[in-house]
Length: 78
Picture 1 (cartoon, one colour):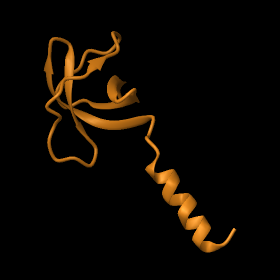
Picture 2 (cartoon, helix red, strand yellow):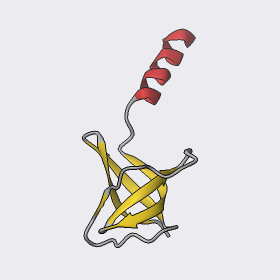
Picture 3 (cartoon, rainbow, N blue to C red):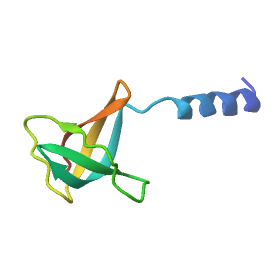
């Protein structure tokens, strides 16, 4: 493998969807949460579902699963 092929392979790997993301809860309504994803300046306009074992609180740092084009908040990261 030459350097050009290696760079091309790394670029392809970086474009693949990530299974998980991190963020901060920016708002809560009806047990669902708006999330400010790491690297973004504002919280999402959409409210995302949370696992039943987690009750979202504004300001919580959370782990998010990226599933089928949407997100599910898994819980607080401490």
